[in-house]
Length: 367
Length: 208
Image (cartoon, rainbow over all chains, first blue to last red; front, side):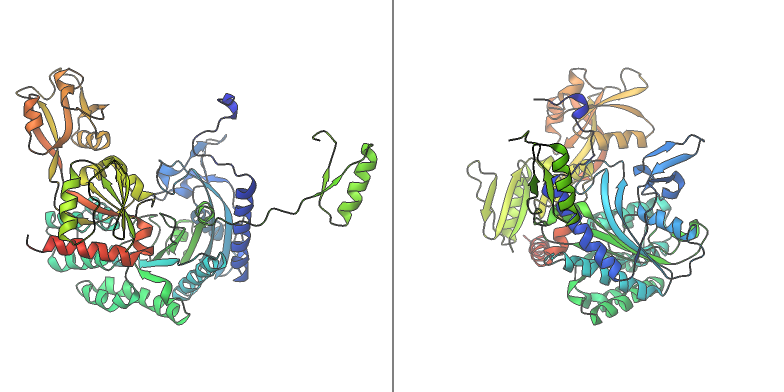
């Protein structure tokens, strides 16, 4: 039987009940515990803001905007990082760096259907603003790792790269912006045939082509391939510098016992345009897309008037919840309070509540 | 290695079987109507070609084998690490032999196609407004019956076109079979995926 027209749901919205709702709250609680354990402070940002806050080229077409009463173009929050950068530059402008902030809430997006894409996504993440870059990068990767361990996820991996390697290589090719975008798209698909076609048509040198090829070829390998990659990048010293930053981070993570979890992926080059340095994605068996992602964005805060390097990451609660079957046990059965007279029953229930007992008012109607 | 591979039922199947044979990889023997078949340590899903990217994008299959033409239309969020160099064909604009591309002299061209996204992009890119008539088969008869002015479709030998009184005006893209890999499987099942990639690459490099 078809439901009443108003009881049907529009595309993209979600509603969670029972076990599912409990599972989400349980995951959220465990992750927030980790965030707070590393001294991150919760920020509850607004649900909407000026549309311009979300003007990253990748974000804008997916942002739901509307016109406010005073004629301003406003938008539902489609990204926490942009909002937190704004808050750090505005509301928290007097705070000194480094700042450690976290959030947990929904973003709303106008998404075309696809794996792992929804209009309403619950994200839990953190931002480390200011401070030493390498130390901050290492800290946030370690926190992400602790979250996944804390959720008892088996065999998770973090694929880590540095957006600067690809960017510097492309800069040294001196090709037009359209070709750069086409190249970014094909490198991201790890499609060597497509990349070769693009590079051949633009007369890019064989050395540079080999370097780009190495980014795709070595993707997914262990960190032992870093020296080979460094050699492949000899044609472009600025790209080597970027790789050097990644090496420094990786050796810190290895020293901290996380080496076994790391894979290299310098061909992960799409996504939000504000990333400038180290980028990473977390994967676990059983889910066809990443469960979390993050990276360094050193120029985003400058857009809001406070130049400051920053790094952050987030987990998709929806993705984690679909991966984890078990949830907290349903709460123990409540004690039924019944009496023939409502006032008496209510008094008894109130008394038991002061003792912390779980009660259920029983009006006799459903027996 | 225990991977799940989505295969497109139809014209790519024979080429895939030949390549897997040369690579020393197990392959399901083509009997019966089973759609999920285990062979060696691989599990194969036999699905419609346009559904291959969907199975792989969602991670139901770790890998898939599908034509580039299908990928251009679907733009799935997957890796495409290997050109398998068989299943050569072109995506072309075709019209009735000798006819004007735009016989009605209308400002908007009517295009019959199974590739609405590719066609829209192609005509807009050439500054031509196109009214796409989405079809799912027998596209060649659309111009003959006046449903469309021209078509955008896959052309292998051109025989079907000729038999329906059509000729190619221009190529939109070329296509071969591709190996696609799920983004998460690529990292979480790196060893198995790496072995499959190496076996197929080896077979492609070896002279036949």
